[in-house]
Image (tube, rainbow, N blue to C red; front, top):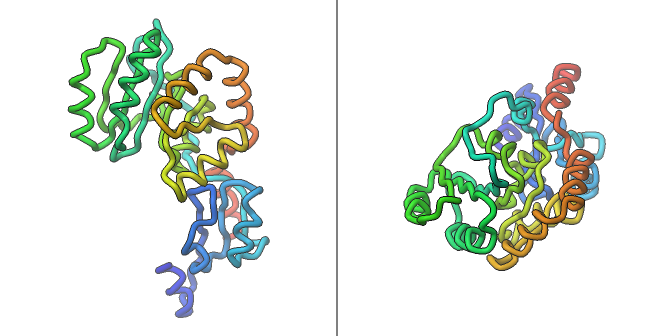
Length: 245
């Protein structure tokens, strides 16, 4: 919006917006980009209704660094059981303790790796759980390696986080979407066969068990991710910008 204001003043600035949610969220219509990168071609109509011309819309997908899925190193995690990764974003969220305990109780043949981000309180709470199948981490700067090492990823339905999991092609369960942008993201992924949605702790366990046991569902989900989520969105965007400007 600040750059749009400068453009209105006559400044010669080129602006490319990149939407990071699977919905045309409010306030985007108050910007005036030369081009607008959207997450998927099926969302074009939404952005057109917001007032954007179709010719400025680029359906490259949400930008995730190519290096994110080109994973060269491997972390030191046990390999004798499947790993269920629970990532709550940088700040953590309210039901993580209940989810961790429920999975440990009902799916004991797996390891649970819980990433707490910057939430030191959550980290302390989870570290007090005495279970050899639980691995608790705080903030990590190599989340892609944890995603790669996991059989299933449980995550809040942020647009960028969900896309990061999908570019690594991992079965995914979205946790308790908050009505609004999170529910829009989860709905897009679910409708396109990219994830499952769990609205409470009981459903988290049920869906995790179902996904673990159903290899066809896992394969279908990752195939859908490869069809719909562009791994090379950044490369497409950079090449476009270099060519256009």
